[in-house]
Image (cartoon, rainbow, N blue to C red; front, side, top):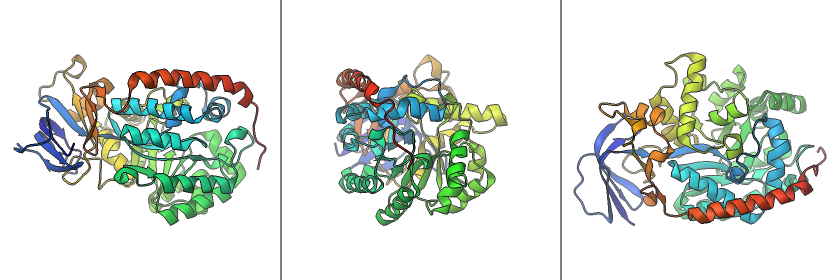
Length: 451
């Protein structure tokens, strides 16, 4: 489909001007060519959107597609116990087919709730299967295999040889980076300092610079994690990453709940990006990141759901609401207003990923990554002179997403997914988790020795 004309939508553009208007949008060859007013032209498809809200697709800057199968199997634990007791053994049990259906299950949920771009972190093995799911589904994604070569409680199937981890990552990069005209990109994903040797992290730094791709890692999520890093590396997370030369505009740090003043300065001065995952941080009792302070320092902050087993939903509407309300309980009702939070979910996420010239707002020349909301429901009314940002962030939900497109290609229409066979994915997801659970007894207790 080379052209789509969207007629009479309420356009919430998320551009610098804060444009909110009713009019038409034309997408040609996957790119937005005209915005606003009445556009009288023929198109391959016309979508009549009167009464609907047109938004840039949501950009989630931290997801674990490989963990979607683990939903509901790691509840009520703090971070390190959550990893050691549940998540690492389950990841170690994965096979190629289970990774594929875990990814498809997650992508289906993401598309259904309006997310069109993700920054994803996979597990150690079978990453090709996740990339196949990404390719087939049509979602825009930056993804990479997780890298882990250190830790005395890491299951042996996840414990990597340093050089092999780097080689495997490069092979995946050379195969997948830039696929489908750049819709799919590779990122290096060392899990976090706790599970990576300095040799591995320095290798990632060098490869990131050589290939010009980003680095995606967790940092300062949990007080116990920080204490462990200080004990083993002699300094806090962000200071250590800066010490070894990883802190740069290509570094994306997930969580950053517990930062000291020096680390905030490093993030700002080095141009490091941050991802906020409020649902995950609350469920794991990690804390609440100081997002208003970070934004006030002109640090780029995006939003992400994290993985299904530490959130139980991959819904950006849920994350937006939590991001706003958590800060209000701490700092008063005027912080993190709806427009600011919606920007984090769209243009802010694009800035974190370095894609602000391509996605994140509805402007001529940008990619046709768009969603339509149908807010003709009790929970979204009254609509008369309603603030559109408030309506989207505080009232709307995933069930209101009607249409989703990436690169001007329809992935969902009339609330029906077009690139994913829902019944098949749900059936195979159940079969996959059943198979993984049977393997667990052989994996639990099989841990590596400290490097």
